Length: 346
Image (cartoon, rainbow, N blue to C red):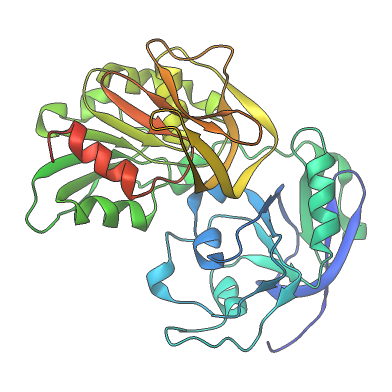
């Protein structure tokens, strides 16, 4: 790093955390402060569109030790800040293409290292509702009232594609329409690898603009924001009920809303590795998660059954329908293979 200067995280409750500058310059970068418990995958974290509008705190202490590899990038960074305890400035890995600090700088993401992330994480866990914060070099210049009123807003519009795009597969067997609320590169790879030609549609696409007769299935991606603000999208998804559908993350929530379900906010969200119980096969799995909202168990979607439950708080982690299914967590090979089967594959 060319220089090390003091930088601060100021929370809406008035607490100030002091550290050192990481990444891009930070005049004032505001966001909802959340934490993730992942021990690896920091590149995938900062390039996950679902973090749009958020300042991410990494609970694992050492970050940056294997540097940046372009093969791990999921999308362009959409988060507004990144906070770590210890920063490795001399990465060592055979695939390393640069330092984490330089990557954040190139993508205009400000960060802080040298922060007491343990104390900060406890504060997030004990807070009721969203905890807003701002990364700044001058905390005295921050207007607390403005900070308290901050809302992420329509985050999906910031991360979705602007025009339809196509990703053909070798030896294609299926055609899939991907409704994009913030897709990841690994979503495309997983579908292509299973013989699916993928056409990506923007989030604001209407059902009439997707020629459903051309597709064997509809894939609803994950994404950022409060699902309740996207009822208009859920209403469009409802027009495809009966066709094979697979959704995850925000896509899971919007599909549930399309079927009459409701969402509710978690106290501090699930971000990182969490245990879920598969109610269909009576098995516990550890999966990657990144969400602050869940489907309310008090009003489940019509015709849905809970397929996965969170082991810790019993919240809904998956739903099955007679035409498809959805999961709250990042899908694994098991879920992608199941999607192929409901489209008629083996």
